[in-house]
Image (cartoon, rainbow, N blue to C red; front, side, top):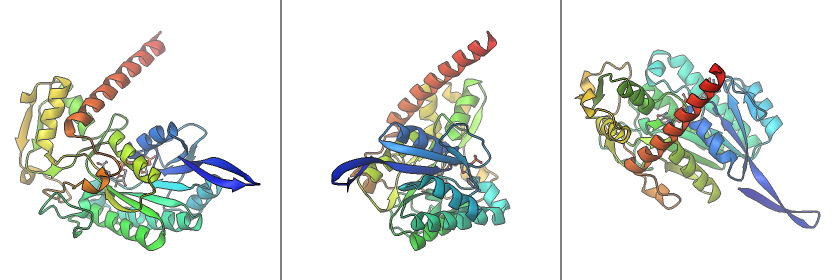
Length: 317
Ligand SMILES: NC(=O)c1ccc[n+]([C@@H]2O[C@H](COP(=O)([O-])OP(=O)(O)OC[C@H]3O[C@@H](n4cnc5c(N)ncnc54)[C@H](OP(=O)(O)O)[C@@H]3O)[C@@H](O)[C@H]2O)c1
């Protein structure tokens, strides 16, 4: 995406400078990868997962000086805040850390982004809802059940309070090939013939990280602002998602046993139905169906596995 302006009597174009905070994460890495080939000049940060390359910067978002330094070096037009303390049960057990990263860290990023006149894209979650009704639209009442959801909602409020131009993108159960997640865990277990127990009465909007990155790119290119549900196109139980994934990969679906949400001993309470209505984003980009997304995920997984196998053979030689 380009910015154009008149300079010295001539029209000149600049690629938008995008800073992805949390580029080493499941979502941030895919945004970093897909935006890089798509008219943006992309820079990314990691925290503990060291990433090599010219465009990578180490940064702790709870440290104001570190945040300021990275902004000074990059001077971004757009900031995608994909960094967070995302372990839902961990947030319940380590509330102080969750608050420091997800609320105070977000506040620091929001303040510095505003100082640099950068547009902020904040990744948020379906867990801001209590899950009593499902199919939530952007303006529905928020009422998080667990501490992770509470801190993410407080993060949304920091963004609204400090930034004059922002996008809040709520997403749900993200999966992809680049970092461990629910879908990759299933592939690993089922491919080894291991039995899995999956809840059949918890409903979500499983989101392929490529689809999520494409939705965010579409919003940016069309200058959208405000709150959006950027997620997969269908409400689905985790069990039905596991069955569809198993079918796509040709695994034995008999390995998957349905269990109830009440049978799972999670530290943090989960909403029963936090599925997201995606009508609003549809004007900008049509979210993928479960089947379309799993088909792409399967192909990307096969490609990556072949690449990894070839790389290990080269090392072996
Ligand atoms: N994954 C999902 O299912 C899901 C669902 C709904 C919403 N979301 C939201 O989507 C966003 C991205 O999630 P994700 O799944 O990509 O998360 P993730 O894979 O857990 O990655 C988290 C990222 O945050 C970075 N980070 C953690 N603490 C940091 C700190 N103190 N300072 C700077 N960076 C820090 C991590 O860096 P290092 O790894 O280098 O330490 C990593 O890059 C989050 O805001 C999350 O709340 C995710």
